[in-house]
View 1 (cartoon, rainbow, N blue to C red):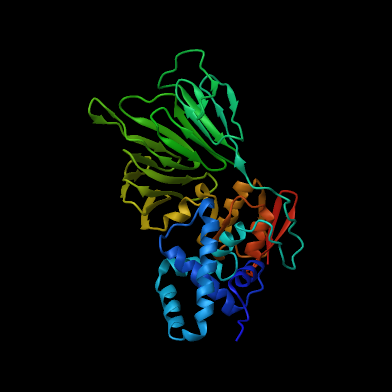
View 2 (cartoon, rainbow, N blue to C red; view 1 turned 90 degrees about the vertical axis):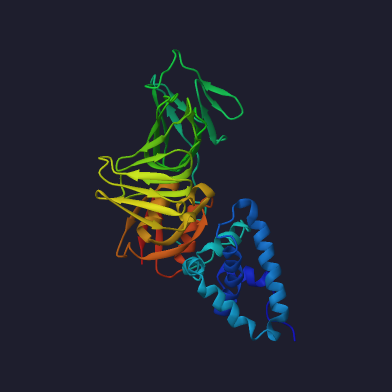
Length: 389
């Protein structure tokens, strides 16, 4: 008997929101078990490959579906046993989650459907590589949007060696430069010791042109991902210190994410590799983190927990990822990356969502994915977003 659907049709129906419950859960089952294999969200290079793989798995399953009555419950049990999958499925089931983002990104021309005409397609474009540096001498250097990384040493240059600026005088460790990313911008800087720092939108990094032999110190406002290069002097390790308004992070060589925006009540440090110590500025309280742990600083307290680190570095990997996050936090991410202002009207900003979307899609596309839950609507007026029921 001819099947009533095929793999390509299932994926297409999932993308445009016309899949029924059985079809939707079937597609999600194969995607979510695929994600469970490595617990890491795929980047742009792997999206097409994964989508094709899902389609092939679906084809095999569909052909033998009628002959596999005992295996379907096993598939469901496998999904439900995994805490990672349960969290990922929250918004995926509402078409706004990980699978929707991946499949939809692979089909950039898929049309937007839905009854809300307040969202204008392509009205607001995503952010890009934007930043500027203010040198210790007071000169402002605008960085090219066609580049994404700048190297700091005696000179300031792009990775291809193009020199942007050279100081008029020899700079010392007291010469502090600052890199700024505006709303809708991010950029990567490689410091004189080889440490690589990627700044998220609306962030500021202060650093010396060269470090002392005793300690390497930078100051951060906003959010950044650090890949600290180990350093030593005369056989002694030189620590790396990150200072923010509410915490200090000391490392020797590791990678971690720091989020400390002035308009948020708490700050977070999420460790990916290595070891870091997070302490309060008064140094009366500190916590040592292991990989996979996050420290949350709030009102002179430090709480630690094991977390899904994917959520902490979503912005660096090209995603807006929501891991059981409140609508208020989701809209904060959108506000910074798309350089918009957000207002809430007659809706609970503490509603929680899970899933992800590409940060390189137009804002209307991202908001549409959230609207498909049926719990929230958006009205775009210029660069202001009204969030309502």
